[in-house]
Image 1 (cartoon, helix red, strand yellow):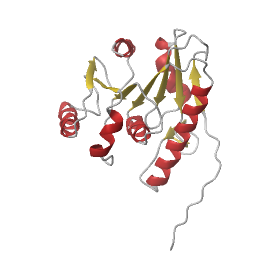
Image 2 (cartoon, one colour):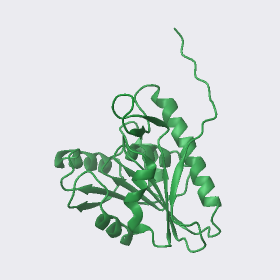
Image 3 (cartoon, helix red, strand yellow):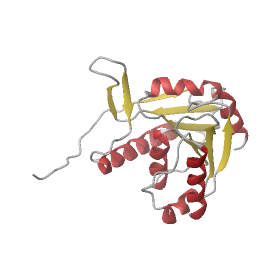
Image 4 (cartoon, helix red, strand yellow):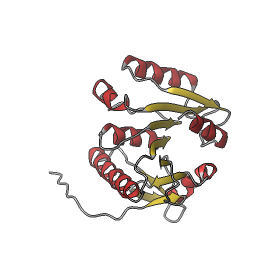
Length: 216
């Protein structure tokens, strides 16, 4: 048996919170986690909707029913099956969203913030590592760098931006040992992240978001 892949045109979607006006100072590209939808995920960032922030939430290209055949619909960025194709597809998708959103603004000096949550952290890592987008602030929220990135090479890209890790002190998926292991791995590869902790679980937290923005 021989596998063959073919490129096709696919309709994908993203959601925006805020108005793309001349008052925009920062664009937030926020990528959801596993089994979420972007239209619900973006509501976590309403606290930033102050007329100066434009929040953009792309949605993973693979939607499915969470349970059975009629349960709520959710989305994923990729699985282990044909993973390289999935990664290439979502990087191309995110590049297209980035270009469309940025070209719609007259203010070309806006700061670009990229945030990945949970599974979305690996997504934004691979996207930003491709070197096709300008990023000022890079945030891994409740997640980590994927093991398949060669950080001895990619650290050159990430050196150009401020980098943050935001993790709840009750995160059910990230214990202290896992956090320490990730930071040891990053330090070995000369990548430093400012760590922000908040009181909470595997979730986006309003107070932590506002604290994060003050550090840019």
